[in-house]
Length: 534
Ligand SMILES: NC(=O)c1ccc[n+]([C@@H]2O[C@H](COP(=O)([O-])OP(=O)(O)OC[C@H]3O[C@@H](n4cnc5c(N)ncnc54)[C@H](O)[C@@H]3O)[C@@H](O)[C@H]2O)c1
Ligand SMILES: O=C(O)[C@H](O)COP(=O)(O)O
Image (cartoon, rainbow, N blue to C red; front, side, top):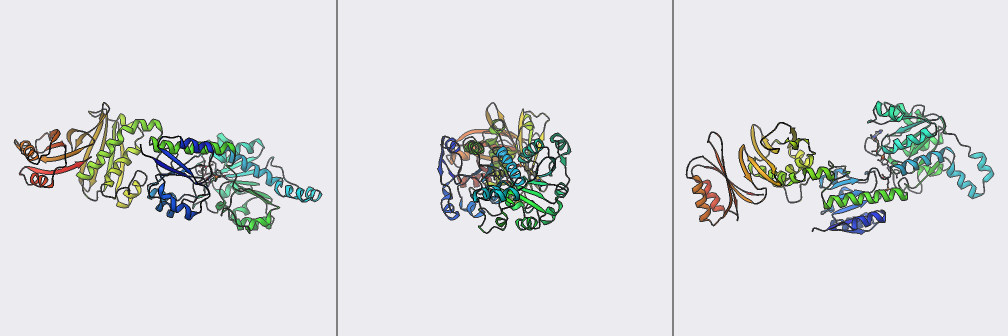
């Protein structure tokens, strides 16, 4: 069994490490707090990497990670991982989206309560002996009946809303994917834009991922839309807020305070612009997910996801390719070998620079989750013209797009002579190259090559001869193979209904020598000779 080495480069729960180390064929090294240059030196030894938000999985690191197959993020945010570079290098990226939802919602709520009641500066004042002065200085506000804007109504935003409703706040939410029906269900007002949500809000809380679109979502203009004395809560990502604009809004008195768990640059520099405003802002060092419960959840989840990926090929919570759970994998798993064989076959049969690969699923197969099957055909097709390891199921759509090759998938419920049929067709202009296969019993079989029926294994060495359908040709082929000491293990004959073309497909025990191929190609009546290594 292959051994996969996994590096855990940020602290995760011990139970997570144990779950990973207990998996067959996986060895784990925990080495946290490495400097980027130290990580760069060792990453080439690893097949898997487990991170939280501290390790920066950059394009440079991924380029050096020549054996890396998967990055597991024990948490939600993946803005520390260069997703495009990971995809280009064929590295699957998975996160654990649900494990820290409640902890983060609770932490954000804690920050809102702390900001409303000046808990941070009041605590410091008591310790400094300023008890009396602090009683005067730190009068807070009630949250009861206040208007709360939630930007990002996903898992954490939704949990925050429930807690705010229990505090009798009015909740307005903006999220491009929030429908009116869902907003009604959650009893929140649906805002059509972030500005609409912020207008007249007393508190804003952010629960969106950091992306180029959400960078500095909260700027001076948007802060100005909020009520005077409003609070800003950020337990998502620092880059969502223009920190200088927040500072100016607090200094002007328009914004009363903030609760910040995250910073644009982490750790923040000692002279961070907001640190001088510590009477108004409560800070925590990115602690949203730092609870015993959340860390155990995400540690175990990431371990199980990586284990299943390496051991069974199951893909869960991947952010750069379709997921495939155990049930779906069991259904389509037997087709993956067939898909590889069809892709390899098309690479031999088809032209250079095809326009499109069309993969269609017939009969019962049409109802299955076949995204991975299509990718596997495409990968096997493109592997033939790329260096080993350059194309895989993760980066294959990007590689195909660069080549101008479209992948078109379709499902056809109509019955064929087989219960299930997988058809792959390569097109270039008007030309079509079509192969098909199915599973008979438990055995995957290639059953069609360019509209000629065959019955052939999906692995082995083959000689494919297309010839005029006339007497004597099979004898000529057999004699030539015998003279070259190439033993025929299996032979399959097929011809078109009008007898214009015949196909002889032979499984052979040894590589047919070049001289034999040349001899067959120059034989009258033989139209095409190909060797296939499936
Ligand atoms: N502080 C922490 O420790 C901590 C912990 C967990 C998560 N987080 C951060 O919180 C974020 C949210 O986590 P989640 O689990 O709720 O994710 P989620 O995917 O469930 O929710 C994110 C929501 O944001 C919405 N969204 C995307 N772009 C938007 C935009 N421009 N405006 C408004 N909404 C937008 C999405 O539609 C989605 O519903 C994560 O991306 C992560 O960065 C921080
Ligand atoms: O996105 C997340 O899951 C949180 O920001 C948690 O980050 P952490 O794992 O570094 O605490």
